[in-house]
Length: 351
Ligand SMILES: *Cc1c(COP(=O)(O)O)cnc(C)c1O
Image (cartoon, rainbow, N blue to C red; front, side):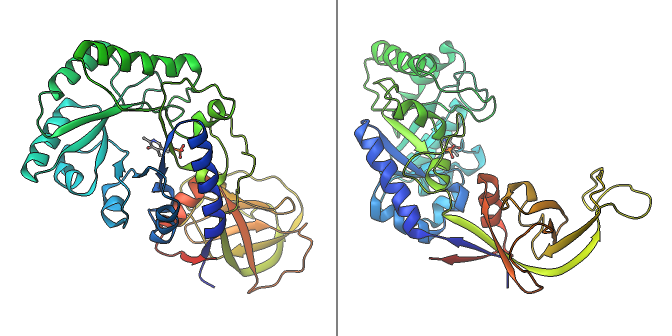
């Protein structure tokens, strides 16, 4: 069989309903983040059904094809070269560069639209966002003069590059910025987006500061875990997405290659431990589809490695009888789901 990723739409709906209710309970709006499954429309339809406040993706190509009545949010900072499309296909975008906001304003005017933005503040994780308070004030001062831009809110992104964990202190800084701006410019800032799935631990412990009004959730939705500590969340599924691939060779072989050892197929230096003769299975999936470190195998199977088109497993201790033509099913990490949905060689099956 062609390698297939199975998508359990019922479990996805249950995860989404649960997080939507939990966010409501904590007075938060939710942006359902769709980038990990390449904004697959079957999953989007579930989102349309549950109706969280927003649908969000990092790629304009994904937003373009999403069919929904919900407001669309572009998560990655718009490239200057794509502002026309951003204005056409996103209602809201996350921004940190005045030059880009100015271009968005010009494009929005041309299309007779008001484009809403969330200004990103860098609270120390050092991915996107305005870092200096002076810059923040001068950007806001300028953008308030733009006729076709609305400042919808402030946001921050944590636990992405620097691994900075959201804490009450860190998020209070965001709320402080909001109050400063409201006082200085006599404006109301509607939305304060307090991060991604790494902010859920605070929320569930009732520690999320009051001024936070929104979360942008992706990984928690699809894997049922928060991402500050990697804890599984109660009442949520971790197996919405599973991968099935077929055994194309099954043989007993030594565990150490025979002959002088250089690099593997991907130019990586390799070493081997002698474990004697192993029962080894080759499956019809490889690095072009997924890095093997993103496949979660059962306890009695271990991953030997992978090349472009082959996954090698040690199945010596696997209890059930196996033969060529059988398939195996695996759970996946976030990175695994991400790459499988990008591979054109992997089928999708919905249950
Ligand atoms: C991907 C992304 C999210 C969602 O993050 P998760 O950890 O998957 O919840 C939120 N915000 C931005 C800006 C993102 O790029």
